[in-house]
Length: 462
Image (tube, rainbow, N blue to C red; front, side, top):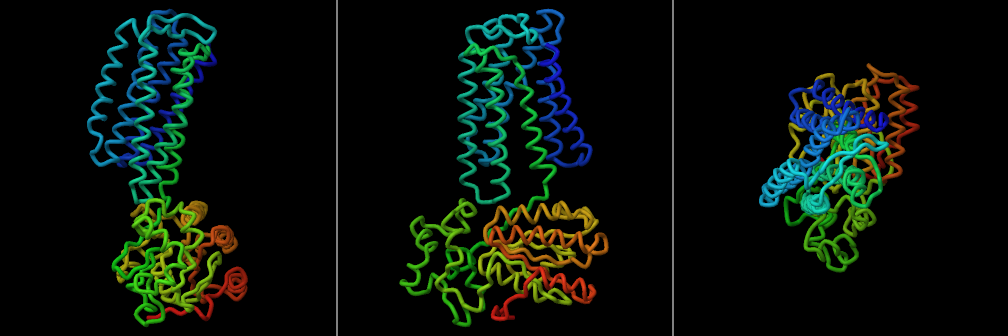
């Protein structure tokens, strides 16, 4: 009895402690505020189940077991609120139905048809359910399955990768936690498995996953999908309409090229078949066709070939050369990520294209993607995570001179080597732009040894 009651109580304390800790770190954040409310509800659930086990008599245990069902009932209303919110106002009727069901479920607690009484067992006091419990269990599980299905349907219509990531976390968290919760709360009494009622213990899955996803790694960068600005742009996402090779006549876009050449492009044929283009396709980042054939463009200008899976170095006093190459890669359809000492407003002051995400190396906590120069582990995680998630990404890294002020050169090279391994495995491109005057001959030799030069044949106009 003590084991199960203590476990539920510890789960409750864990939930509320994490919620308060996150809230205290950023009390003005809406995410932290909602996270705290959620953990309070989960803590009430766990505490009630613990008190059920520790109750001195059946009367007290019956009170606590009824209280423990209140947060459990609200799960459906929370899920359908997420569906309603994520779908931008759709499924309003079902959302209201879930709220009506919540009130109806609460009313069941005042009857003997749901919980007749409690009885002493080796696990402590356990509820004895009435005739209506099987109908409640079926309704709850059916509504939960429907809600998750609707949430997934909404997810398939989204294009923003950040939002897709968030909704994926919601779905996976709900599914994993509810499998365990239903096993102990509903399926065990229905099928007579004899398991203790401690479903609240598994609510810590929700807390852990939410903290890891929304709080601890809230700096995770999601790629910006470049939008087509002209009908001349390629269906794979390359912006031919702003490409110098296109205007110089060295290559044509697939919209204007020869039909025989277009038929050699697997991506072009796929896009035509589905009447779409890659940037507007919700499955772009997980599409095997896109990954396998993205760089097989039959119209590609030879001077625009920059082999992937390689980390490059560019010696530049003012970073101009690296930025030109990075911009050119984005025109070619690469997903971009910038790491820079320069503030985003300054970096993009003359940027006429859609701005890619930028990590600002600074002590100032001004923007969401600001990283302290001493937080190399977090910086490495963010870059590696971006490269793993995004096919054909190009990372422009500036500010290594600034990082050397707060870290040893060897530590920074460990970051570069870690990123280089991910670049090689994921066939991406990493461009380290630095001022050679900031380093002595030995350090410059290390950079030259570990990073390649941009091929002389690669041309960037302007």
